[in-house]
Each structure stands twice: as C-alpha cells, then as structure tokens.
Image (cartoon, rainbow, N blue to C red; front, side, top):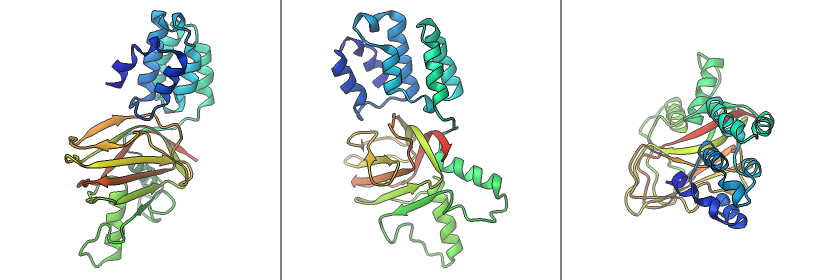
Length: 258
C-alpha cells in the first residue's frame, strides 16, 4: 500500500524524498498524497525534518485532479496547517473538469447529449482509437456500419477485444484531455503477462505512470491509482508479454475540454 508506506517517508532527506515522490513506481493518487502531506503537517513531523509542506503540495499534487469533495477535505487539513490560502490559490490556478471513472465513456455521454440521434459520428471529433494490428477486432460482419459500431463500443470500454503479445492500442482525444488518477483493467492478467500503460500530450513524448507496467497474475476489476504528471490526450496500452484477453481499459480522472 503506497499510502501506508509513505506515511513514514518524512524521515527521508529532502533529496531522497523528492526522488521517491517523482518515481513512476509510486502508485498513489493526488488526493491520497495530499492526505499524507497534511498528516505530516498536522503531526509536526514535516517541519522537524525540514520539509516544506506547501512546496511538496505545489510540486507533487495536481489540484486539477481533485474532485470538489476531495478539495474540501484537503482544505480542512490546510486550515489547521495555516496554508488554506495557499491551497486555494493553487486550486484557482487549476483548470476545472468533469470527474470520471471511464473517460472515454464520459466523452460518449457528452456526444449523445449533443447528438441524441447520432447525427454525427462519435469516432473522429470525440475520440480516435488506433490499433497496431490490421486485423484488430476482426468479425464475420459484412456491414461496415456494424464494424464501426463495434469499434466505437471497444473504444469506450464496452466491448472486449483480446490483445495478444506485442499488440498495442492508442486512444486519442483530439479536443479533450484527462488528469489521470487511476487505471482500471476490466479483465485479469495471467501469470507471465505484462502490459504497459503510457500517456502523452502530443503522441511523441510518453510518460509511464506505472513504471515498468502491470504484471500478472492479476485479478479482474482492479483499480490501480496513479499520478500522471501531464494532462493526457493520448493513452496507449501495450502488451509486452503474454496476453490481455479482455482488452478493455477504463481511465479514472478529471476530464477537461481542450
């Protein structure tokens, strides 16, 4: 448990603590990390070890990734630490968005509100999905409309398509981005399987929120918290070893219009 492990990290020297907090292997959400910092401040252990809580909050907590409820809880602690004004400044500076447990499906919901009769295509403006394999999602359907519908279902996490070793799927949101707080794999991973989730703002420079990736054996329906440093427009799922038979991915976070 990353949160429990971090509770005693105030004893580390500042440079080593910074290295730990910057590590992609630290699977913890922004709110949970803010809670740890506030606990250090409330107990007085941060100042005794020469750690600046406000600097830690500003450097490592994405205020844009906090829901209104989470921010309210942070402010309760911040008032006790006499930094509520500074936290409010950081919050005001952060662009607001929509909390989501499935960013791609939230896009679909916004699309259906604007086009209730599907007058315009969903894939294109709202979301693009780019598989690495030409035969990805191959079906016996002869209807191109059915094939596009199935691709749309997969893109928003409602249809399973098996991913084999070396398969890669990229999702691109041309007009939106998401501050990621967690990745939810709907399927399980067998022993020996290894998948990687990568995020990017431009499709060129990629960040790996989970370091070396996620490894099997791993049960289905598991949420892995994370703190991506970027507000991602591109999200990539790669199967390095074994397979990911379910193939679906739900992105938790705060969805923003570009």
